[in-house]
Length: 504
Image 1 (cartoon, one colour):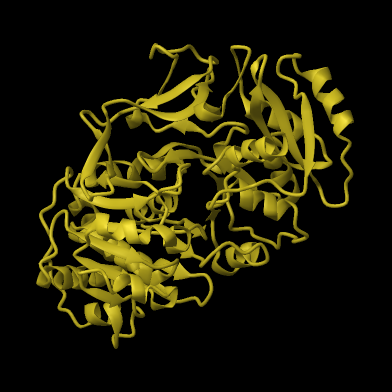
Image 2 (spheres, one colour; image 1 turned 135 degrees about the vertical axis):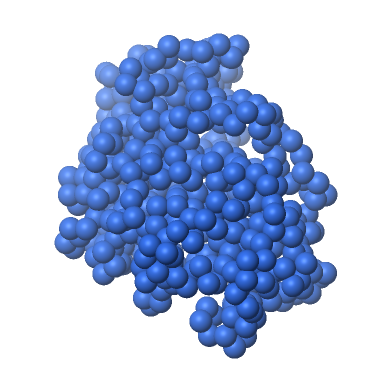
């Protein structure tokens, strides 16, 4: 499964529908058709070939969402070199470590990001991103002047396709290294899992420097001959307007943006084209799921994946089962195992494990630029969950977030879900805080819906009436907001630290 498959998908789409849009800008309507993409990837092959950029040579891409960004991303992969995407805004303070580790042969950057001082220390050639179709300056200007050839690299499935830097849970972002085999093997099952067809138009505002957006809205879209509508960033006021204006059939999201839509005063305008909205990156509270569908009259579906593996489970909106992340993609050979690695029965909660690519290594870029193997064969994702009798996957939390009270494991998501059923609550986070007797004790932080009043004592009584005594929170604290990490995910570690500062 090498880059030749990507070239074949592009050529097939260009032959079948050369004038169909591959990529559209939600903000200004600029578009790249499949015919233009086919020409562009072959021009870029010439550009890279003339500069001696071959298999496993790295092109660093430092830019935000725009059609020029994705045109560069796809063309480097189609050529057979290695694309390295970095979210500059979130990783700016780490770039002086990231770039030497990447050791790129070429850097393509957005001048508006203010990277001049940092890039001056990089030995590799540097080109401003430029404007596609302009032909005057920058990277895209240089590519536009190249001949259309088939000067690709004969990279194999075992060569490096991309390096993507995660936000992760640690201070230093991790550089995940994926081979062409890993990246491309995920594309067709993901397209099938979400029910994509050539008639679909996906609207995606998520950063295309992250794996989640790349592995849903780029290669699966090209493999199906579908269209991608890209927005610069999430806008609550423009979300439904963009979907309606461009006839999107699928829109992407995450629990934070779903919550923002629910708690704003926007009214969904008519979007008859929209099949469903996706949610990923973190578990979606079931109550928010139901409220979204009731309020906006649009199906919501949830998927599950990781930077190291791509998408793991998916379900189209028409077949979504509320509370699950869909059915696992078959090639991952997903299993639920206990602490000894033994398989568990349907309904039993354990560690989520997978490893469908025989002999596969899971690799990271070390600080010194070498590639380190973090695992081989089957690996645990770090999440807990179970498979139901119908094969749907339920993700119940992170192993690291489990509360262990008196030797008994307690999932914070179970308590969060219970409290989210209260109409006056808009956000919940349950954590384990140190306790001299039980090791950890259960504490929940809650945020009131605008205009609502919360009574912590009454909420404690409510939990105590529904939950077993050992699971029920011993304290409930009302907060104005809950801490989030760089990607908008709930930061439970910050709450534990906050508790420690207030009770030391």
